[in-house]
Image 1 (spheres, helix red, strand yellow):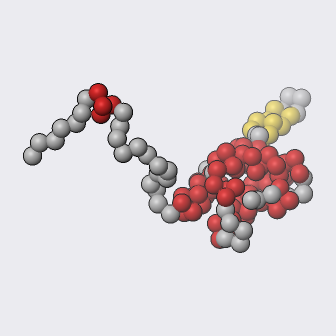
Image 2 (tube, rainbow, N blue to C red):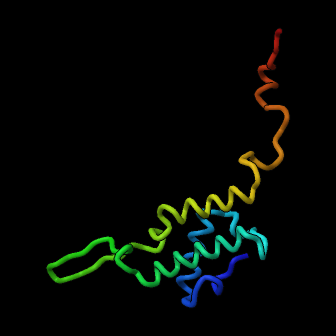
Image 3 (cartoon, rainbow, N blue to C red):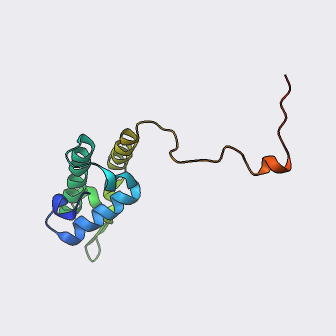
Length: 120
């Protein structure tokens, strides 16, 4: 499991980045230690952390001239675009196929009401 200490020094910000990332890509909690997917995820999260920490011009949401002010976007906006797609791609790659996993009933409940009949 990826921890906040791997992401950055500001514990609160690192934890917030991890929570948002786990919402975007739930598989992050199950990535194996030492795996390529885990290393890629940590790299993406570190970059998002740095972008959020520095709050540079990319994070400016609005500016005012009268009474001079700058409004910054929240941390989740740092995930917009490429970081979100990359994290989801890591999860897709670790699943192997795009098929659903789990056990599903072989018979649908509605078939008891209206049995399906097949004719050749």
